[in-house]
Length: 173
Image (cartoon, rainbow, N blue to C red; front, side, top):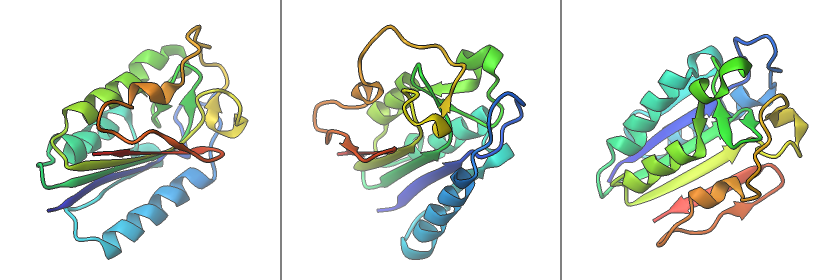
């Protein structure tokens, strides 16, 4: 059994209209160090600030979820901006091209549903609603669908989301 993990902290963005986040990078580095130092694992992926491009995030997810075997445990941590229409912002996200430069919850859910990992732990430290202004892209579209963005990740044989003020935990089995 191996632990496969990706830790993403996006505190800096190339689009000057996206506010920087002070703690996102630090949080990803701390969790990465915790898992790297204390868990038997394949090389954990750490993407922070300008290295956390949409392409690199997708590559990290593929190394974590796509390459997992039925004996593996996968961990995905993201700290950064979310959008009101339920997308994760990468360092190269552009407000004028959100759909092309962000990761949707549907794309993330597809990766979770198709992974062969025995279990998946997902920690999202972002805001999809605008309720926590520090972690939401304020100029992002407001969805007409009142559904919770995490509902797309929940399914049969999976644990329901556990909510804390701004962090969401999902455990896949």
